[in-house]
Image (cartoon, rainbow, N blue to C red; front, side):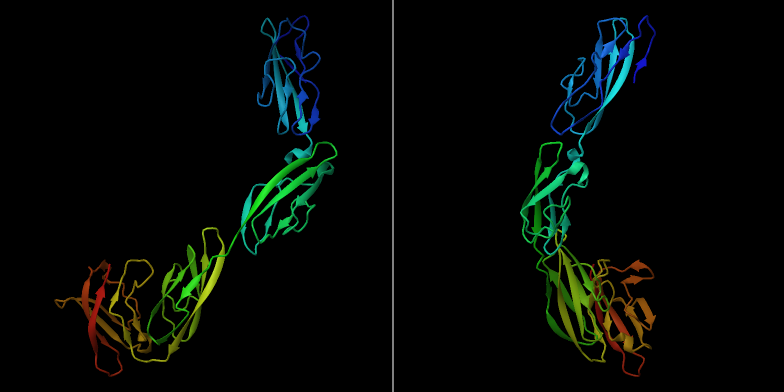
Length: 340
């Protein structure tokens, strides 16, 4: 095809040549015989795109594209008339086939290797080695379940083009060693116990019932009955492992008073906890400053005080409380410290 800017006794015509299909790494000669006809010689040539061309200003440059490419030539004659033509240089489909990028996985996992465009098109065949950990040594994209880091070699064959060879490294990460502590512990009902996890970067605790928070390496367990908690740890490679903690709970009816808490919104000890308070639904809690100013009061206290006085944060200090359980027993009095 061609485009002519102006008319002449013999119109200027550009010929970019015939469509060609080549193998990766080979060349195609562009332009016609001749590339310019008509108009007024001499001619100027401008080929685009210029990448993978031996020259962008000659009549018949050599192209060695790495991907299928449409080339355009603009011919300009001595009087400024122009003509344009194009030619497509295709590649056999093997150009798009490869081993894919290096990848990684956690042990006991699987990953698909091989380039996303790999197929059996144009009669392509594949040979992977070693065979260890591969679902097939002849699939375009086999499943890899290696248990150790492995370098795989791939040879891709085609009836039209020379073989292509690649390597891919599959890195296998071990599972993190997640440790939860203590493994076993015994508390009285109403008490809390800190439990911790190590060996990972991120943690998720289950069962959530009775935990002060479910994310992070530290949480407080407040089970009402014997409970086994599981912590799932994830390391920097995204690998996952877990460990367990069992808290044995002895039945206990007395309230358990905590003498401090830290309402800083970190998910740990953000509320003043009174163990077993739920067993005394008719309770009445009142809290005062050292000078006797009441800063909090609640009937049916449910472990919800966050260290505020009508929404205003109270300063770090020691406060004094009176707790009436509502069961006829004498009031319990003591102190609690807010830590910020």
